[in-house]
Amino acid sequence: MTLTLYNTLTRRQEPFETVEPGKVKMYYCGVTVYDYCHLGHARACIVWDVIRRYLQFIGYEVRYIQNFTDIDDKILNRACVEHSSMEAVADRFIKAYFEDMARLGIKEADEYPRATHTMNGIQRLIHELENKGFAYPADGDVYYAVRQFAEYGKLSGRKLEDMQAGKSERVNVEDPEYQKKKDPFDFALWKAAKPGEPAWESPWGAGRPGWHIECSAMVRDRLGDTIDIHAGGADLIFPHHENEIAQSEAVTGKPLARYWLHNGMVKVDGEKMSKSLGNFITIRELLDRGVDPMAVRLFVLTAQYRTPIDFTDEAIAAATNGWHTIKEGLLFGYQYGKQLGWGVETAPLLAETVERFQETVNNDFNFPGGLTVLFELAKELRREGNIIVHEGKTETSPDELKRQWQTLVTLAGVLGLKAEIEAENCKSNGLSDAAIEAKIQQRQEARKGKNFAESDRIRDELQAEGITLIDSRDGTRWHRN
Image (cartoon, rainbow, N blue to C red; front, top):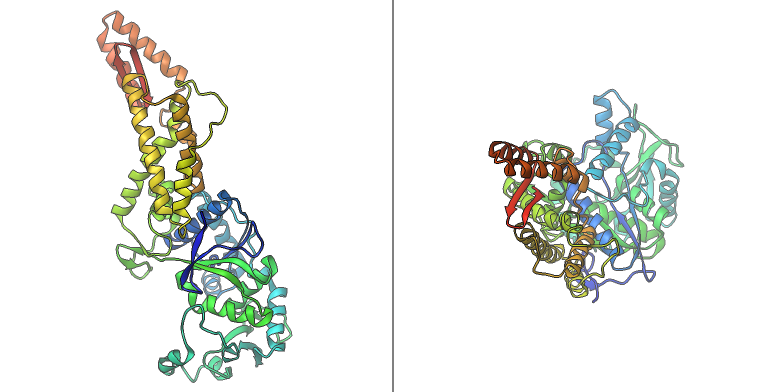
């Protein structure tokens, strides 16, 4: 089974072959930290989290780097409004980022470089571009000479001559920045300091880097000249990723990345998410409404990662129902394992099921297809659980059920889906199994004494605590709702 990926650069699906056998160097263009993360960030972070998990599952050693853009006009504007500093704003929203991602079950990256901590690498790269004739200074700024890079546009498929046609209508020729450029397509690598803005000393004078050069420098500093996977949202293909390629490859003469992967955008009720439309939803707002983080993860994974996805109340309700099904399967072993006589030893996974899961997902990270395998396992375990509750026995051998359950737990873990046992136990208001058994014993004694009012009271009391009793000729069984 060969893993194949759709490569934005080549516009085709290709077998996955890494620079170094068995190892993956992966970089994700992270967030600009001026506000709380929204649904678009949630989708991207979940997608790349699961891709990283899957690569590790099939045996790769993955080094995963995600940056923070902590120099940006939006950060400066917020700092100005709040009478704060760029650093204080960035620190606050980086902290919020980690809080939100923890709630979604996102594994932390191996490293989180920040632009402000990569200034030496940024300046070194600009200097090399200047020496090679790809950059030029202009009154304290430094610009990249786009026409010097013959392959410019290879990622996005755009051609300079096509872009030139409508550009004259969008350019303000009175703009001082425009007047500094030798060509309208050139972009800033270094920006001269403006009054009141943070600045760093450089060979070109005090200033700060442009956005595109930051990622080129962080990739090179942390992962080297050529990486295996460069990931990000589809909105970054042009100009950000296009410019990264132009900057990095002009200096190294090597491919920046072997595979360029891009996740699709998130819409809300069919509309592009924006504050002006009033449909801007942050991760913490959504989770604070009571939506289960695992339902959000499932919602994201039900769509092919490259396609747009529409967030609606109906979609999140469907994802919530789907999560309840998988969660029932994940909790099966904790609820019935003791009754089935399971020991602490690990059972072998169902090889054919794992193989089918892997064969499906290997087709360009087809996680919706992988979820189909999980649902089959979960529904079968739920059916067996119902049989245990109502009949006190199973149709399948305990050993086979243990293999099914452990296969489900393993594959769900690959997708980052996990049922919190502690949270489930809290639903019974902390009642332990022993306490429940004691209540059932009290009820049986009341029934023997024909005190049916007391018997009903105990049953209703347990029901209110999320405990359902089922009476049969073999006695009384119970389960947590």
